[in-house]
Length: 276
Image 1 (cartoon, rainbow, N blue to C red):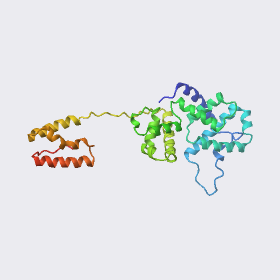
Image 2 (cartoon, rainbow, N blue to C red):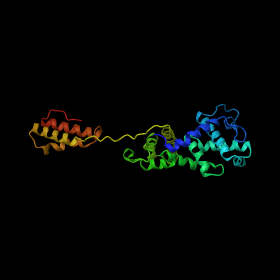
Image 3 (cartoon, one colour):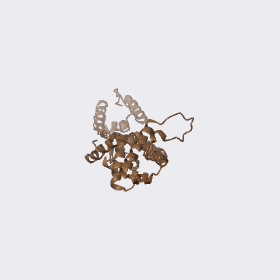
Image 4 (cartoon, helix red, strand yellow):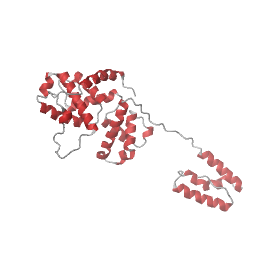
């Protein structure tokens, strides 16, 4: 899916600006990439994951933009370097999983909405509007939609294919049977991953239900007529023996009824094998 033109016009110049701030100054905005999680125990050798590192870079860029947008108001909101570092850690937790285009869109909207640097809560609301710019529901709304339509997902008219694919990845049975504390985190993770694909330009298409012509009645009528003619009987005498054809193909019930019918017909002199 192509990004809306209005979104492209906002994000492209902003991405260029963000790129120039990838090496964030330690003055006021802090060097989060090197200082975050300093509180970890000295014995813990494992470094940040790739996703955590990416989030840190994005948070650095956001704060660099805030400093450029709000100038002295930013300095007033974050008066010391330590305050900036602590704030960035909280922002990193809140923004984990969000990709650059959504964040860039939200940063651009801050200039229109807020005279002072936004709080985390305010920024998350702006991200929700960014979802709308791509025609997407926010993760929570998408989860509720998936839960409401989990019984027949292929026939439902989804707000966006991303919701369907996130539900499929999560497993419709889990959405139906598991508690929210189990199903919600799984769905959110899957949905955010699919949102990334949509933002990257992938076009999602929900598979169509292929309606297969049911020829069972015609075949049953032909079979009934054939057997009745071979045994010189009325079709009404044969029809009850073919009851097995009304059962689901491949099930044990259908197999048992077919075996019974086959045995009775053989006793009556019919030598051919009944179809599965």
